[in-house]
Image 1 (tube, rainbow, N blue to C red):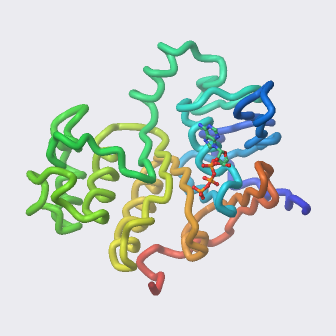
Image 2 (spheres, helix red, strand yellow):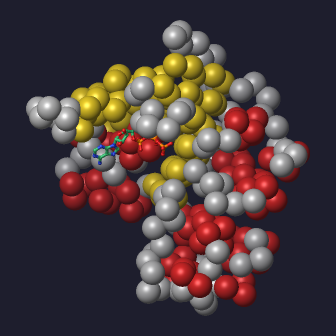
Length: 242
Ligand SMILES: Nc1ncnc2c1ncn2[C@@H]1O[C@H](COP(=O)(O)OP(=O)(O)OP(=O)(O)O)[C@@H](O)[C@H]1O
């Protein structure tokens, strides 16, 4: 399969640049499995990059490697000038805490904290997430525990927790996976708003419709990038019909 060369996206400097990433699980054993096989990726600051691909193609592993959650075997990852691949474990922790936020596919809320306490893990709820909690009709469940809430409510809380931190890059693994069409549209509107404010969003999705609101669309297959396309004129998320 061929890789389409991407047009340069404006004059913005890259917020994220990964080069020739390789990641193998069970290396040196009969179960050795190369999940990422030379993945390169560039995302400009304040843009939304969407990653698609079949189940098992390596999307989550790629996001974990880009965000410092998973070490790479070889290759480089640079995020906002930080060479993530070269950080010590302590530096990686600080990078993850201060510069990036990660919205997990399974939400990863702490089960014995309420949604509000989860959102406020790092600091009291900032005006923006508080306003979003109202807009997303979450206020009445903020003092409930995760297992008292629907999957959609938990997913939105996980997004609020990420947005309650002042970060440059937001990594989202299927942020609309548990949401109905209306809620998915609401969340994508907010991701477009935060990207317009300079936050870079790297997001995995299985939903082709999400590509329409993205600035860049990267497709993986068997651990390789098979297409990397700049979307010249992304649609406002509010215009999508679910
Ligand atoms: N920690 C791990 N140890 C061993 N194998 C792993 C690990 N994490 C992922 N894999 C394997 O790597 C492959 C890619 O997994 P990954 O979760 O990155 O794919 P994906 O494209 O995100 O899939 P999905 O769309 O189903 O979430 C899979 O075969 C998976 O079993």
